[in-house]
Amino acid sequence: MGFMKNMFAALEAEVTKTLNTGEDTSTKTSNAPPTRWERAVVALNSIIVQVTKVDPDGVDLVCFGSDESPDWYRNLKNTKGLEAMVNDKQPSGPCHMGAAMSECIQEAMENKDMTKRPVAMLVLTAGKPDDADDLNDALMSAVGTLAESYEKCPLSITFVQIGDDSDAEEYMTFLDNAVQAESAASGEMFDLVDSIKDEDIRAAMGEIKGTTTSGKSGALIGAIAGAALGVGGMYIVNQHQAKKRTEGWSGSWKVTYEGEEVTTLTVTDDQAGGLTIDGFPSGDPATGSYTPEDQVEEDGFVISFVDPSGDWNVEGTVEDEHAIVWSDGTRWDEIPPEGGSFGSYAAAGLGGAAAAGATGYLMNKKFFNKAGKKDQCDYIIVMDRSAKMAVIDTGVGN
Image 1 (cartoon, rainbow, N blue to C red):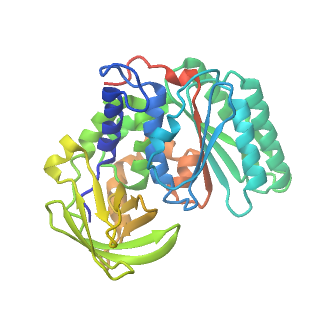
Image 2: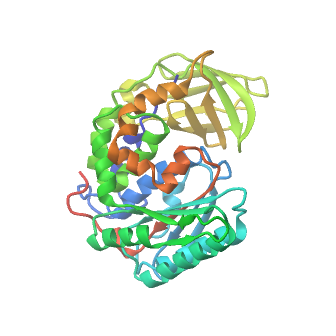
Image 3: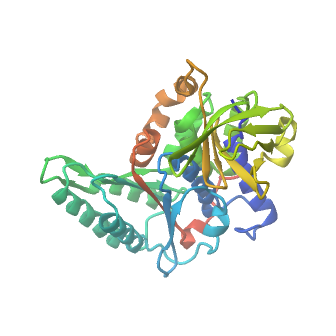
């Protein structure tokens, strides 16, 4: 099993780099805490890493803000270049969420076959939109249309509040309770929307600090830690997670590309940052490298290998202790030893957090519940890029 890239350390390093250098997102001074937008981008990165495990077609991302039409980034299968892409425009203008969500819902209804693959949407937003009436109308129209045509609701929308606006909390509660309709075919009540408030995430993160969280649920919760707590909050969780180390990358790894199995690789780790990789279809071995443990805090963690042809260096993103996604589009999943099960290992680590009230509450929200159970859905993430996301919340950050 591999010496893992600690997800929280990577997230913290990403935000810290942004704040210290001003790259891509920020013109603030090095000591300034992150904006809601910066925290949301950190969260987005890790959410996509987790969700692409169960959506091999890739995640659709929609950014809306100002008075322009929403920007669509379709079929994202890894996070390479993601930050630069979404930061091509900075948060500005009014929050016209109604128009953006109408477009997303129309896309799902007209261009997705929801009889075969339901659609799960996640909306990262700062507060009550400026066109709240339009959003209400769009959501009520959608749930009414779905209730006329389906026995079970094939669409779900989870709103996540970024920041501590009180009017946002009230509006999230309203949406949670109001957007419903009864199915004409089954009589089932379609509850289209649920929401996660800032205080919900903080409560869950408080529980995680006292447990040894691992696996998909822990990673999904961790994925929105940055949005809830900022760098300072993630640092606390990272200090706990950092205690969990593994013994090298040696082992057998199943390689897939766009969901199709390609080969099985045998990796030998010299325990000093060097990898030898056998089993590529060409028959040629490859060499790789990773950041040794004693250099991780200073340099950050990097893992890569040189393609057997020698033509290019392939960079990896470690999703969890048994999975790596690579810049060439492939995915490696470690194969358990005979008679072993990584599922039971993860379950043991999840013991405290999975049973915890606030954490369990978060994981039962529609989007995270589907991703956590590996439901075959089309996943769409919608990001508020309005001026409200440029705010720095009091008490959040370093």
